[in-house]
Length: 289
Image (cartoon, rainbow, N blue to C red):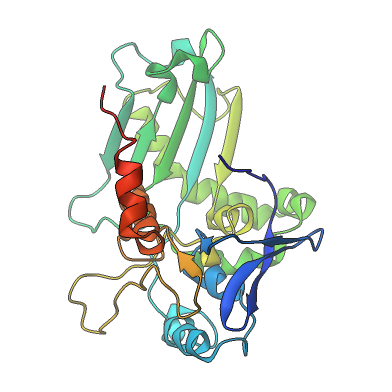
């Protein structure tokens, strides 16, 4: 088994004699020693940020290659996927037709790319498959633009990121949220036309700034945008970092973005840490029903 600590941010990876040996927590300053390895599931930028510069030359060289000085793709850092707009809604069940599927995807314009702003929207009504996700008589909806919201358009509002009161009062910010959320409302109404703004019990709009603040995603990114055979020569970083005992998994390494890829990255990372004999022992405990 293991212990899981929620809402516990890490400030720094502890490196001693060239090896990662634990973590220092941000709020309390408490140090947790690692028995075997430290694994970062953060995005690539924060995986580097956890280790102060000057601690390990090889790590610094890799950091400089991938994130550069500004960690901004326009200045030559590794390219990132765009961010998201989200709608999180709670609605009365009567607003969603019985024949509406639990999930649908809407492409606004087939002549545009998948990463054109607001062009592809995914709508999920999870409570159609699992009624325990909402109280009786209600449904929950999660709808989002599929990695096509550019963070650059939101940089003008970065000063509001940590001030909820200021965000609520800023008319330009609220108007921009409404503008960029409109394609999502339109996509929902393709199958549930009565689900409109103001008719929901709960309406929450999330932006790239939400990703950046609450998920600690650098520039609200969805992962690295590294295409196979790209002309720039970018490749995904390996699960092993240059620091002994410091590993990474998630969308910043090997397998890439998306749930299947991220899950497989965990297996790749475990494979890099464990010996063949450890794996064989665990395999013997796996029993198929």
